[in-house]
Picture 1: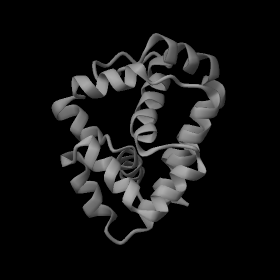
Picture 2: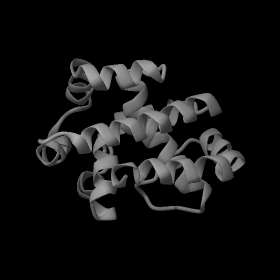
Picture 3: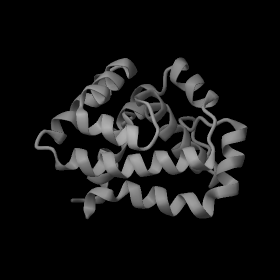
Picture 4: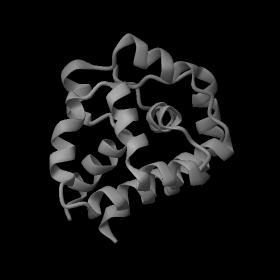
Length: 155
């Protein structure tokens, strides 16, 4: 599977596909939720582990391309409900001590904090100063794990 497709699947898993960001940006509510989300090392580890497991799971589904197509049109509440009603997804979240909302806000918060920590300044990068400081302090540990999770569907 091409890396571009894998990244789109990983973004689907976070329910924030790049094309949607580029076209309409994050809502003020989504931006605020990301700014309010407080990253810690245990949370980041759980988010990355869940991202990798959910990416592998979604890529294995026969309808993953349809899910990828639909994701940008869904509201955060619809995405959370979809995650909660899927037994495998719910189990992955539970195993990682996450709720659907934790995951849907936490993964973009972590991803954007890591981008900001590496000098990213695009208008679509939303990260609190505390999360950027956290990401800078833990970049060497978290970036390789996030990169591996982004490529999870290749295995």
